Length: 367
Image 1 (cartoon, helix red, strand yellow):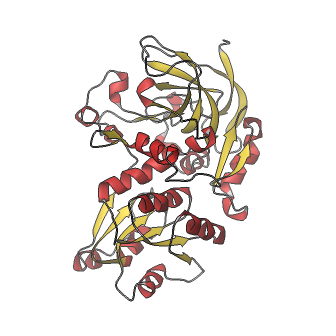
Image 2 (image 1 turned 90 degrees about the vertical axis):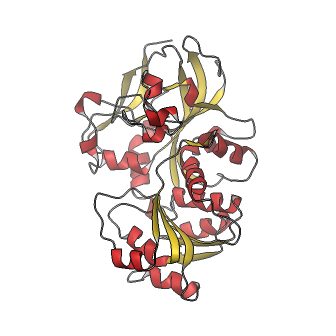
Image 3 (image 1 turned 180 degrees about the vertical axis):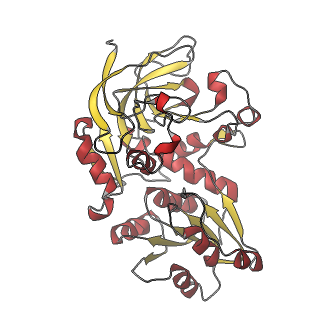
């Protein structure tokens, strides 16, 4: 195998100047590690935040240049010493989260399986905050064998690349344990929200109000299992709309999937019934205002749901894979735009302007 691969390389500057398609070193898998030929790689909103400069401050210069991409699936092409769980030729989905135990550490959180809270710094494939592990924007990616999951024959690599997203919804329901009879709102119908709807349906929840920014999102939310949809309009108060639909009562849980510089978490509190829960999945930009009096008076809980790891003795990524395998969650139709890596400028622009093009998920595909 050659020592260079083709990759979309980010040098730290803002898009588009900071991206180029060029040669990059192929990582060598050491003991316990595996080299994967990436076939499908999703463009995540967090990738765009780095490329557009919003979160550039979190990336150390020493980890640049970098190859982004953490929603990946492909084929094993090389295994390091001692690897037994996968072999060359296996189709795999890559769980990007690596705690310190994959690098010789042993913090308490990783020891109990909560590696998403790693005390020594969580390493993501394709997110160069702690260290640089080349991601799916390159021909080849590297991961520890414990972070690879074989893809069943009835699941496409394109669908499997979205497991990083589905596992986020799995984690949320494992934290909250919603069930039959619960009333819920899913606030935000990007791909996180759409998979959140499907996870709630798997848990038996039948009363799901989806709040969407675009009409095409609202249509797909219905297909995913939403019983009611609210399409946001200029000047609309989404809290009043939820209260109108629930007869002034509110809902048991709101799953907030918006984040950014919005008031979505404060609004989520307002949508809850007294004693309800606002579950925060969205990534917010620093401090946001919230009506603490209303939160206290209505005894509403805010519960943070950050990424995923394990639920009891089960890996949440594997639970997500099983949902796809068994047909309980459907990813068909969620990948709306695909590009070859050489078309990276068009692909990133599509992801940035998704609302204009009815785009849910943009993905790089390789033969």
